[in-house]
Image 1 (tube, rainbow, N blue to C red):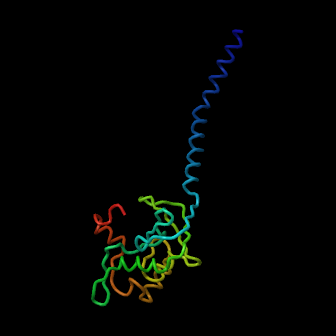
Image 2: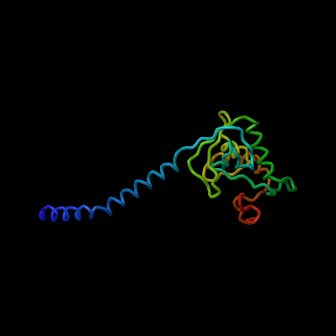
Length: 179
């Protein structure tokens, strides 16, 4: 009996030495599971409420059009010697592209305001790409060729002078807090 207890204690302690490795493996697996859950493609379909030229709400989900940056509401640009509310024009243009139709948006990441960063379509029309192509948004990581074409053709914002939306936000940080 004494011999049995002694061998059990030794083998039990030997098994404990694997506990840190096992714990590390469990933590890694849990981390991977959480990461995969966050990277899962999310699709949102429905009627859109346009917030500004690159933000909207669909089926209660706040979205940001990925790869583009549109002027902010309240941003003023210049054209033909006068000032105009280019942020409002960008919002109206996006609303016109949607035209009251149901849209489908898909994405995997969220921004710091917990908006889904998405590519949105109205039928076959990629709204992100079209906003840049029509000159009412600038490329922000994607759609560089569309921006070059819009600039060359003087579409939208490119008909006049404007601050890039990112630069405008930096200057007017207090006005854009909590977007």
